[in-house]
Length: 446
Image 1 (cartoon, rainbow, N blue to C red):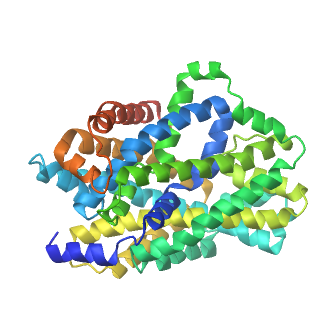
Image 2: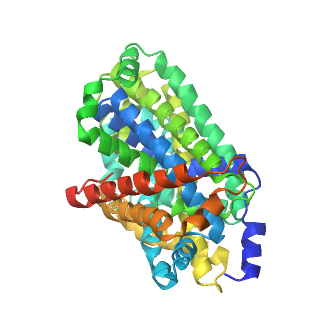
Image 3: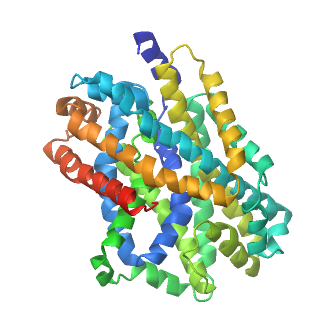
């Protein structure tokens, strides 16, 4: 990257405040993994015991994995492709590094294709909540009417992708501004819903399930494995997406400090979502382990039965649209910025429009759940775990230790040393490799 291009990145694509950065990063991390993934895994894998295991991994991954991705992005002053190349160049392997980043970058684009479909579903649910139609239908039949049909949510799909594009066209500043609105609204909405659910008869059993550990469950290796996978993907530590946000972070910021805050608020989002969904499912004696059906069949059925259910349905799906769009922003930004770095003559706005056209052109053919479901499984089994592992190895085993530590220690009051680096090298990297191997050989879609 030329010096003039570095200046462009720093002047037009930089977050203006630490909290603006944190909210944008939380917006990227918060999404379906928090709102339906976390609650149903809590329900399936031991309630409070799963939460304990999950929190252990969140602490580890937030401390080293997420902060490392922020650091390498800031050091490279660019996204995925440039960050990998610069990391490998420190060992004289730049020729290898310029290719390594393509797989995790492809993961960002591939997951964006399926994610846009899911958000289109959410937008349809929001619209039907606004009209009141969702309050009178058989929710199972309603969900199947579009989830099993080709080209069934096209208008919503277009609105989601084009709306996300519009929030990106002004650079990191627009991402920061939009998330300063979307993320506080998201948290406020879910807190309102949690208070309402707490008033439901029988909801107390859900809280007991969530907060009274059955420690014997921790003897089951799958509880730990699922908790680890959930922590990886909840924080978006995928070897790609968070790197680009690090590239827009000021040198005076402590990357470990902002990573910890990102992990904290991401965890709060997951817990608040669980405190809405799990007690509600216990109150109405419905299965919390329903995946996508949780948002589109189970919860609407519950909302139909409670006073002011239509209002709370509108609130719920508004929050979900915000969470989904903020995650999609990150996916497009990660791919767009990296391609701009690679192909320097491209125009940012043109590149983003092209990515959105590709997303729609392919995604419109993936709208039925029997297409986007296997697609998302494929990405989460192969591309994302491999990408996360490539990232972990690149930062802690390929990149020179002094280069990484120099970047990590910018803007800190007390320098990080051997503890931070060794946790990354000897704990975080092996865990990433274990998760990757389990995903590949057991065909588990995290």
